[in-house]
Each structure stands twice: as structure tokens, then as C-alpha cells.
Amino acid sequence: MPNSKRKKDLSKLIDKQWVRLDLSSPDYHAAVNELGILLSEQSVVLDAEKLKEELFNRSDSAPMIAEGVIFPHVRSQALSDFAMVIGRTVQSFVSDNGNHFRLIVAMGSPAAKVQEHLEWLAALGRVLKAPGVIDALNKASTPEEFAGIITKPL
Image 1 (cartoon, one colour):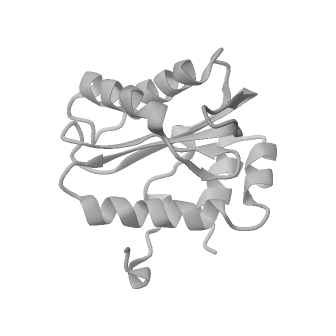
Image 2 (image 1 turned 90 degrees about the horizontal axis):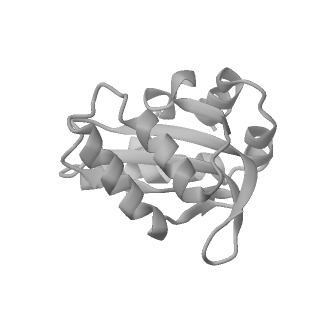
Image 3 (image 1 turned 90 degrees about the vertical axis):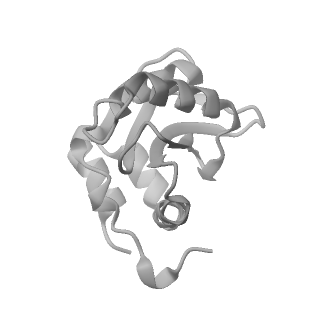
């Protein structure tokens, strides 16, 4: 279990340039592909094609990290450090288990950094499960506002 004394600062991963508020993909897999392309633009990516393929392959088993948020994530040798992108879809999608979502968080971690991967997951989960956060993210009008909501200390 992640050490709560080592809380992660999400502002180290989330910046307005990695937020897309207008994903217009016709389905969930196309939206994940769109985010995979954005994720692969980060400087910590060593092999963009491998990362996009791994993320897409993981998308079918992606968990819901909070109500309305699906979270495809991978641990991969295609990364030298952690990377995260977030997208908000224009239309709501339904997951395989019937949950509706508009927010997709795609994260990649270096394969060997298992403990730190879990710490980032816990940090993101704490923020997204806080009262009012999902509503605020769905109403945010700019990437700056969106990123500010995610990175604001609890």
C-alpha cells in the first residue's frame, strides 16, 4: 500500500498542455487512441508507437477510478519517467460494465517503478473522489482551469 507520508504532487504530471476538453472521438477506443497520441508527445517517451499500442491494449480492462472517470494506464519500458494526459469527451460513453463516463485519464509509468506507480494512482484517486471535483472538471471551460482543479492540494 502506498505510504501516505509520501503524497504525490499531481502538478508534476498535469499541465494544461496535457489536457484536452473536446475529445470528439466517436467511441471510447478512438478517444484512448487520441490520448495515446498526446501522451506519446511527452519528452519522457522513448518509444511512442510501443506506448500507444500498450495503452490501447490496456484500454479494454481500464478501471473506473472515480464516478465518471475511466483510467487506462500502463507500466512500460517505452517510458523513462511518468507521464499523464486527461481528456474530456464531448459525448458520454458507457463502459463494458454499464458505467457512464466523460473523463479519461491516461497514464504511463516506467515498468520498474511499481511502488511509485501505485503512489500516483492513489494521489489521483484521492483528488478525483473528493466531493465536487468531478462536477467541477465536467464544467471547466479551459485546460488551465481543469488542470488547476486536479492539482489543487486537498
